[in-house]
Structures are given as structure tokens and as C-alpha cells.
Amino acid sequence: MICTADHRASSAGLAILRAGGSAADAAVAANAVLAVVAPHRCGLGGDLFALVQDGPGPPAALDAAGRAGSGADAGALRAEGRRRMPVRHDVRSVTVPGCVDGWLALHARHGRTPLAEVLRSAVLHAERGFTASPGLVAACRDAPAGDGLAWPVRPGEQVKRPGIARALRAVVAAGRDGFYQGEFGDGLLRLGRGLFAPSDLAEPCAAWVRPLGVRAFGHDVWTAPPTSPGHVLLAALALAAGFDLPDPADPGWPHLLAESVLAASGEAADAADAAPLRPDRLAALRAAIDPARHRRRRATVPPGDAACVCVVDDRGMAIALQQSNGTGLGSLLVEPGTGINLHNRGAGFTLAPGSPAEYGPGRRPPHTLIPVLATRPDGTFRAVLGCPGGGIQPQVALQILVRLLRGAPPRDALAAPRWRLAGGLGPFEAPQGDTPIRLDLQAGAPAAWGRRLPGYGHVVRAAAEDEDFGEAQLIEAGPGGGLRGDGPCPFTLPRVR
Image 1 (cartoon, rainbow, N blue to C red):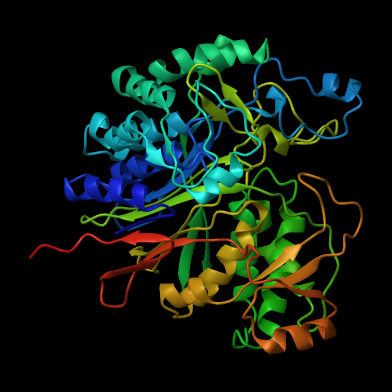
Image 2 (cartoon, helix red, strand yellow):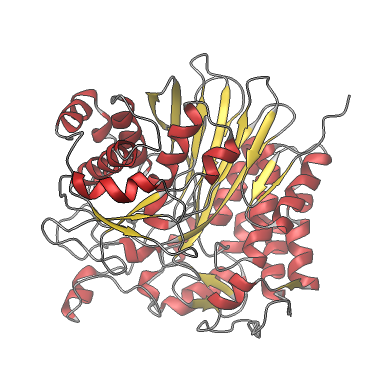
């Protein structure tokens, strides 16, 4: 089974599975198509995280997040009078993109299909053209054109991206050198005007790292370590598992989950390791949560957009892959030759002197991407999950996981109305003191939530029908061993008997 946010990407991954490819092959194929047809979600100019389980036991975690260039200088930005990092239209918000390195690392370790076949569908979409989606049109209204590409003005228009096709063919022909030392790399060096050095592009961005995990609701739940904020989700999940949660229709359910996220977020805001997951810290955080009263805390909800690909193949390999440009189209800068839009993950750095996240050469910024994989106590696969949506990813993933691990089928876990925390802050702003945190309720939420949550001390707002509460892709191994999943575009490969 494969699930993505676009039927073209799901179709590409399914074709790889049909041809005998692995889950990793299918995930790379689907992500590459998304990079072509949905640059407002992800792209070759962004970063990547993934979890892969290939047999019982903990998964392998892949961190393909790039680093700031050798010319990164927080002091120079402060001297300009800036108090925070630029977000768009400034190359200093760009770090070396790790996406292609991530694809190659996945394929090298877990691939079964030649890379040319894995990337074939993406190349054809880029060369022959594809239909612009409403989301792409909306995102591209203020975006620059690169590589002679006229961004679409109406949904349904045909779009070609020949520069992306050249970049993909270069990866097939020469591996990472074809990308980082080729047309794209040369253009990034020129665009950076000294921000990046050739040595910055020579150093691979992708590394296999040890995943983080917690035991909660009778399962082991895994994600990537920092710079992924997965430890926020895991801490919140562990905190929530320590309470006697009521039925989801009861207002105590969103209250306890929201308080768990807030406690975990405050504890982990500046964490560079998994310290918030220590049992003593979790016990202290749980003891500070009042089951009947909201406590104000420092918190912020950074924006962001991403693409998620979930795949399970016929041999049991499972993968959750997340890939992103940061916010929408990213920095709104493109590498001129290939037309690849560049992410703005560098906006996650801080200019505060001495901070672990201070902008500087070779440093990696805090991320928002959280791939998730759950296993049963015997180490066998239970589920893969991804929740694109910037800073609300831990909130959305927590709500879905709690429902799923307590027995709800995927469709019910994903379709159930959600809450979200809103700090009232602009993009990448730091909170000042105890920031009032509003609890927004999705349309269709239980009436008791709206009536009784103010009594817990929450500031509550009923959201409009069309407001975004995050999306998700999810695949699980059901009670009978078969696969079931849900999300925008889940495709299943029928079992051949």
C-alpha cells in the first residue's frame, strides 16, 4: 500500500511496487513526482527525514537536513538591525538542500530497482508536462519564474519543468555529484555570492541515525531525533499515556492532550537531544499538568508545509518519509538554471547570541518534520504516519495516534474532528513571557468541547468549515495482518495468490 497527497505520486509509487521494487524505491519515486508537480509542498531544494523498518525491531532513521553555508554570519544580520532571521527573498534563509542526498541514501541501503526506473515517472512529468492543481496555482501567484517556467495562472493548465528533468537525469547519470557538483550546485554557489563554498556542497547531508522511541498505549512509537522535533510528539504521547483519558467526546480528552503537547513543547523548545524523554523529566512534567485546569506556558506554533509518503511493500518493509521546502514554496528564490525552488529552513535559526540554534556556518536549523512509525511489543510493524503542517504536526499526530493505538481504524482516526493550538504569533516569532494559547476547534467537534473547555481555563474558538487542521497519511497492519490505510490518495496493490 502507498499513500501520498497526490494521485500522480501514489500512481508512480504503485508502479514501482508492481515491478517488484521496495517500499523505499516507491517512496523515492512518489516523492520525486511530488517534487515536480507539487513544488508548493516539497522539492529537490528542500530537506528530508524518513523512518524505515525492514524486519522486526526498531526502525532505521534517516536525517537528510542540510547545513548553513560557510559564509553564514549571525553578527552581520544583527548589524543590519535584524532581530530574527529573514524568511523569504533572502538567500540567507537557505541551507544546503538535503533531499537528493536523502533519496540516494534510501536507495543505496534499501533499494531493489535501478534508480533510473525509480525517477522515470518524475522525469516524464517534468519533460512532458502535468496539470496544475488549484493548490499549486494559489501558491505560485507571488512566486518568481525560473528556468523560463511560466507559473500557471489557472488550475488545469499544462506546466513543463525541463530544468527539473535535467537535474533528475543528472542524478541518475552521476549520483550526488550530478546534482551538488553539477548545474544545480554551480547555480547555488553563484546565487549565494559567498554564502556557500564548494566544500559545503561536497559534504553529504544524509546520515543514518538512531531513532527515538517511547512505549505508550501498548506500543513502541518511533521518530527521528533532533533536528526533527519528533521528541516533542513522543514526550506528549508519553505524558498522555500516563493519564486515564476519557472518551474523545468528553472535553477532558482535548484538554489533557493539549496540555501534554504544551508541556512537551515548552520543555523541548531549545533541546538539542532527547533529554525531555527521560523518565524523571516526564514524571515531573506530568505532575505539573492539572487534569481540570489549563496552565499558560511559553509556546509558539511555527508555520510550514510538507509532503508525506507512507509505503508498505509485499515483503513487509515500511517507510514514512517527510520532505519539505519549509513554508510553501520556501524562500521564493530559485536556482536559475534548473528552476528548482529553494527552501527556507534557515528561517528556523535564531539570532540570539549563544543559542544552540544560532545561525552559523555548518549548523543545522530546527525542523518541523516528524515521520512516525509504531511497532507492537514484539517488534512487529503496526503503523506508519505523517502529518504535514508545520508546527501543528505534533498536535495532529498525537490526536491520530491516541485514537489509532486505542483501537480506532485509520479512517476514523483521521476523520475525527481535531483541535489545534494557536499562539497568535507571526511566522517564526519567539514567544514573549506566558503567551496566551488559543484552542481552536474544528467544525464538527463535539458540542461539549465548545461548552465546557472554557471552564478549564482555555480560550476557545470555533473554526470555520474551510480552516486547515492538518492532513495526514497513515497505513497500519490491521488485526488480521492485512493492510489498511487512509489519507488523500491511498492506493493498494492487490495481493496475488
